[in-house]
Image 1 (cartoon, protein in one colour):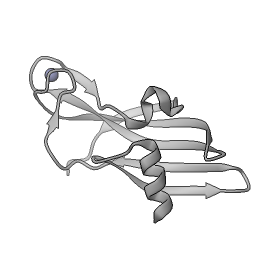
Image 2 (spheres, rainbow, N blue to C red; image 1 turned 90 degrees about the vertical axis):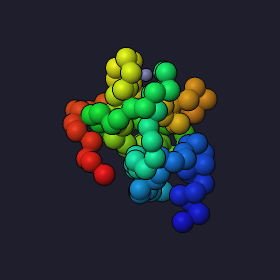
Image 3 (cartoon, rainbow, N blue to C red; image 1 turned 135 degrees about the vertical axis):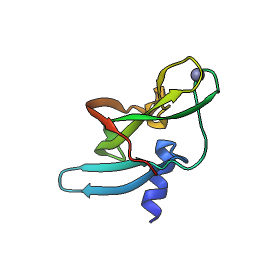
Length: 117
Ligand SMILES: [Zn+2]
């Protein structure tokens, strides 16, 4: 769907992130964007570059007050990374959390194990 590609590009999404669904209400001027992490390739620690493995995930909801003239809620489960060197646990960099995106973290939920793929 072209709209999904446009929204993914606006969010700066690329692998391993992808949009799994969008609910759109023109009446409510609201869109809910569901983003998922698709684990495919090797994972690297964002601090030292050593290999990393997936840890627990946290459910997060991010909010943007005016995304294409709609209130947007981005729903995602964010896995943590466990560095195989000494860095410990890190959070994956989130493309929509960059400073100029205007998305703000609204809700952070309970952590749980990320399913093995
Ligand atoms: Zn590390």
